Amino acid sequence: MMKKTVFGLIIAAAVVIATGCATQSGAESTSAREAAKADIKWENDPAGFLTVNNNVNDPLVLFAGTIVNQHILGGVRALSSRRIDFFDKLEDASGTFLLRAVKESVYRGKGSNLNSDDIIFAGLVVYDKGAARAIQVNINQVLGGEAYVIIQNDTAMALQIRIDRPDGPTLTTLAPLERNKKVYMEPNPDGYFFFPVYEYYDRSTTGIRSITARDLADGIPMMPVIPGPGRDSPVINFNSKPADLFSPFATLIVTNETNRGAYLLEGSSRKTNQNGTTMINPGSETYELNLQKQRSLRIGGLNIDLSLGAANVIGIPEYTYEAGYNYQVRIKQGAIPEIIRLGESDNNDFSIQLVNER
Image (spheres, helix red, strand yellow):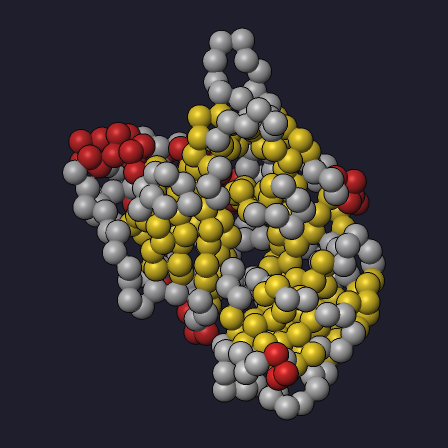
């Protein structure tokens, strides 16, 4: 997999404002007149593994990486979903990229003259062309309004912003070292609570791991403002010093060795895996277990539902999980699962390298 250095990512963040998109993948720029007439694809791709759920009231144009011509994926209509085949937009066989979204009206009106403020949403997508799995991304309904806050990311990790609670819905994601990012939202006189989740690449399991700022567990309250004379811009700075970061998560790889799709239940609720889906086809999916700010926690109440009736739900034994460690559980119909400790996540390098950042 081709890698970009952190220094390359700094440059990438700086040149986002200078790049644009076009209807022809080889074109370097698109005028507003050309963009107004552009034929954007809105239909489902039958072979697509990525589903994008657009919960805002505007149709969006999507990019696999920075907003350059070669990365355009077409669009997703307002309050609808679209299945997308993005493999031909990525040269690397596997990796992680930021899916970015711009309002269609903005793209039509500006063409290539887009900048980082025009990106209303970004979300991490982890993919592997050799072992493709279903991926789902949700674009939050509060995005795209007239009010904004400014958020800074001073780390080499991706910064995922969640609202309402630490494990609440994802608002957007900032690229490594992305600063002065205006996040446009619907106005709310009560403001919002913003929670940081930093995401880095774990080389030991080739997956994404999350860490949070220990002293910001309750989030930062802030009210987005509508731009106007005499109005100060609200800025959110999270404490991002490595010494203050703690990963209160254990990673659980669930391997389904049955011939049926299954769900991982926490109580009666289905847990969502790292690909944003809930079903586990035969094969493996990765989940993060929240240890509630503790170094270790005994967790019970996890079950596997094979949709064969409540009497056939497979209980996962209670187990003491340690923060920062990886575990695997193999599911076989009619057998009690065994939890296997795989070892500690590789946290020697708190960074993430993104595909299509240029």
